[in-house]
Length: 583
Ligand code: OXD
Ligand code: MN
Image 1: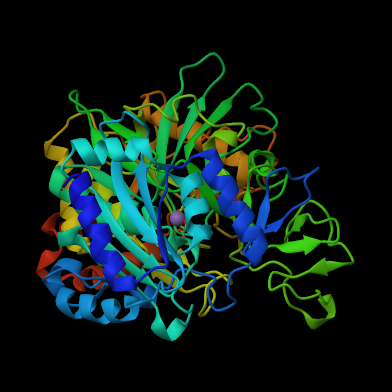
Image 2: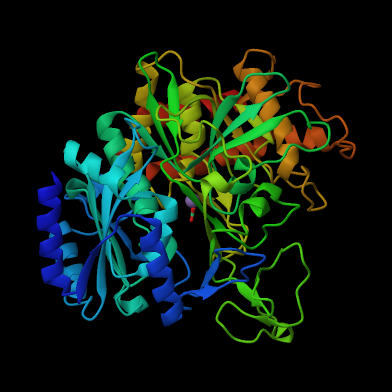
């Protein structure tokens, strides 16, 4: 593949979608200015208060187009089994025919933007290029924050043999004519009918997770739904952690954690808040890069209490999507520091009437902002070789069963803990609240191939390095008998990270249990927390009866994967069950 191949693909696409004109994006400031001016004219963007929010804009999406659409997302591998029971599958020929029929002349009267983009630090051997063709200027603007558009990408396309092809059109934004299709064998994405983030910014979930996860398997690395943070103790060396959590479990908050009282001399450095690409270096050390250049985060609930670093990241050069608007032309959302102003325009552009009981901002309202604006952004955040990972953390939202933290016994056990990860559904998602849903490695919506093969790939790392980081599991959401959270969470999570690093440094002993090492009494620094009596014991309790049921549930879930399930994982379920003994 070369620039010439790129040009002939663009010509071929143009024939199909019949645009009025074609614009090759270079990522320049001038280009952005022109795009913004056009979008202000069409009403695609609204300018926010220039004094308080310089270079910030509000975009209102179609009310039918406000979230990722898992039910319309397909992996179109040749063999259905390669997509696995964790994905919707469609035969590639059928999928192309179906979606190409939608693309036919879909850009008539519109500009077709060609966006060459780079995921990962410039000059990094781990960075990858893609090209997204889209008819949405909003997508161009977002991609210019989330990736590096222009020369850096073109250089890779010219010099390497690979780039990901992404074709996107907003179409008529009709949910009945919407598909997000991935063709792993062709390194191609086709997305039609949605302008929303994960469906439309093809560099993010579609490329950096669904396609990259498959490429990573073939090439011996990992593409994961993980934040990356550095933690620097007083006068100490910065150590890096990669952590996977499902949606609504506080990934962005953890990535930007502000050390609380008692930890003032500690520092947390943000490398990434959503995606990590992990490679083994020559010494067998696992290293991570964040392929993204920006944050595309959920706005509601963000405040100076929950995430002060995030609040200080926003406020300039930010695109807000589906937030409410004050009469001062400032963005507002539920959970904002400022109480709700009396006069407000809601995310749909209507005057907000609180007596009707709705929300002013959409619960999935988003900010798009350059990562470099974050006050805690790591100076290693753009390091071509990435950062060395000292610990991997998996986590879910469980009101019971799972303790605050445990360390798995070895890599294989860690893969088991990731593969059996579960989280309770929240009010933010459709369906019943509090249902436990398995979300292995937080990759349920994002793994582009059969989970059975994915776990086998994870397991294979054990034979490639004897220097792999230890794997931990955390749960900030355990509740007491009174239904209240036992753990304060947010900044106080640093106490758990401190134990994790102490374990990975061999400086804490831990105590053995059937499910892994738990903090030994006194090892978790709880100074100044004033937890109620018995709370620590409840937070760390491993109830054998609930765990036996948990293991049965995990075995049932694993059985869906038939003979693609690595034996090591079913064996591990059995051995944990035996260790739990008879209750
Ligand atoms: C995201 C998601 O947008 O996980 O990051 O849905
Ligand atoms: Mn995510």
